[in-house]
Image (tube, rainbow, N blue to C red; front, side, top):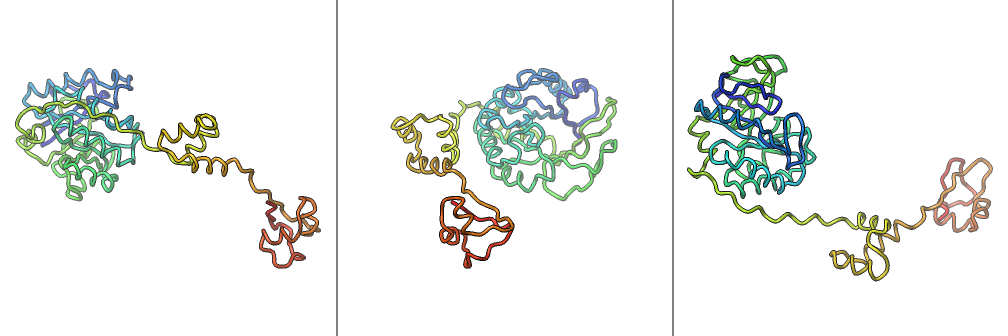
Length: 320
């Protein structure tokens, strides 16, 4: 099937007239924090008109959530809640790419998002990404039995529908986006063009695998924040965030940290940096020792100097 995917940037796209077999519309971004370019609190109000136009024409449709990395469980819950009316009717898709995504490269984030989205919606979304990221994205999608929607272009040149896109067959996917400068009858601007390797009946199965609209469930409790490292806690202690004395010890223990280990790290961080001296022409080890209130024997020991009478200009001597 030949398809088009659009977002708020294509608000003028005539979904009721243009030539396509299926239409995917980006509906949500993040979890409520985006308001710009026609998006209001992470929802594109104009998306529904495009989807309804496709439905009236009997065209298969999909809806898409753009992952922004603002909290996996929170994003998944937002995406399900604000696409509730489309679940079970259109194919769910998830846009995972680098731009405007604070979680890009964090496969654990994508894993959690997909797990929660599937739990809440009852459907398995297609995961959109670029071909160059398949090595990391494909295993996570496969873990959740999610199909892939892959973007890869031969060039940026304008093109129409392609029956056999460039590099077709190099990897397995449900949908291939092969152009970002596509041209189709009924619209004068550039479009994303796609090829789906499934039939309309299979599309309907992806949209509604159980044969009935999925029932939304209660969102899971937010995941507990990851434990901070001893280094991070020590820095916070030095900054005064954990109090002092017995109060500090009690607070650290209540938070699950070993107060003694934290204190040891604090002591290590607070220890003055070791002093050094760079040998100059005419210097002697005994002269350097006298300058710093120590002995040449101690300096020789600390610096592994076998012959105290043999030091060189430019040599760095550890004092402490």
